[in-house]
Length: 108
Image (tube, rainbow, N blue to C red):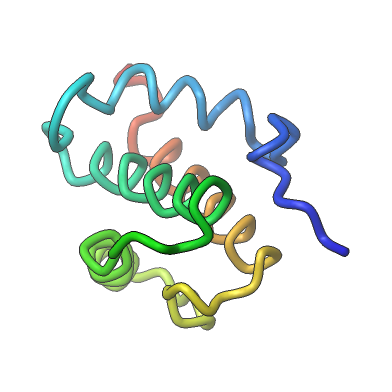
């Protein structure tokens, strides 16, 4: 059985994810940038999977991430929703973290 890697602090880009979180995500509410909000939405969606089994509505996060990926011209094939596999969820984290990292390289 697959185990979510970022939930165990063993994600492929764990350190980078944590750095981006610390620098781009507000302590409360929405992030100040769309890239920071992508990281925040990703974390909320991921946490919902790990801790609550998707019992709370995370449609905002799914829509935001889908639109953010489209705006950044990133083709992410699995639909972002409660039904996506754990493997695809970890892949989504990898893709978003790498793109945000590239966009903010040298700026943070």
